Image (tube, rainbow, N blue to C red; front, side):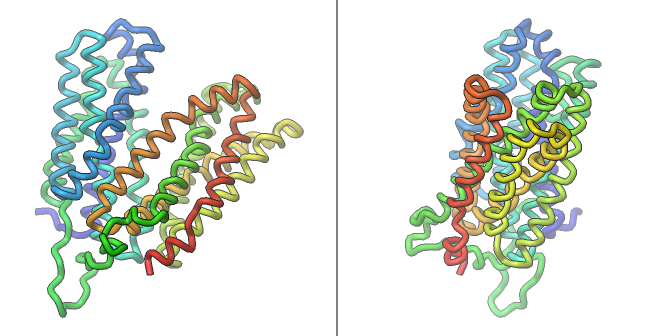
Length: 403
């Protein structure tokens, strides 16, 4: 029988998160086989690949209520089973509209894992470890994308689109019993007992305010806003860094792709180190303000300096890619702590939902920027969003709320 402690809960949550990410964001890695399976154009295939994200937007807020009412274990297990079932339906569809409906369903049922696993971290980990734990948990997103990019294209070449997308389904079915066994909230300690490291006191995260709702003040809304603002430079860099190196600097696509891939390692490590730093200082949002200012400055340099000295382009692209990745774990931890246990599921669902809106709208905004002012202007506009985040970060208000 699996030992149920905070680290086993975190590990199982990450497995479930990787399964969910692979299911929702794995389709872009098998687009050629998707085109062949349904006889669609590249543009149509790209629209199909975006449907899981749209399905996520439709149901994520509802899932947040389910998490707070039914608990993390039930919600995550249900999501894993439904995700595997939805992916299994791909074997039965042959028309474009039915494929679209199934992919929409995959996103609709796969959304709660991120919020639920974040809530588990809130109740299992003491404040002195939450930053590290949330940073580890947040690494499941690039890990899931990385595993999908390595495994799914070869599987699709060998067995076809539906078979390749069955691999995330298998992982979800493996994760479901693990979640059911391990991923529950810790029992409350009896009064008078000494504190156990694997059974943190849930009273630490009681909701603020006289009526319990963390949304009675602007502090939590401001953290949500900061996440949306910093999502713009993050998505802009991930979307346009490769194109910039190819189009503006004359690199080959494989070499530019290697540069982007190289940035993922310090990007992930930085999230962990900042999580540890925030644990030791007890301050989640001051590092976010610092990151906003520094990344905004480097985005301005990326806009201007390569025009005068082209060798600066690659190191600046790497620096900006890394810096724009680092805030996620800190903002998610802050949202969970400010919301308190009874509201954490809903608050993290709102966080994910608003970030998904930012992710969806950023390419649309930047396409207009490129049309009007050219590709390097994307980085200048992204710097404006970073600078705005510096002002919006509620460092003092969050400290008062925690007190």
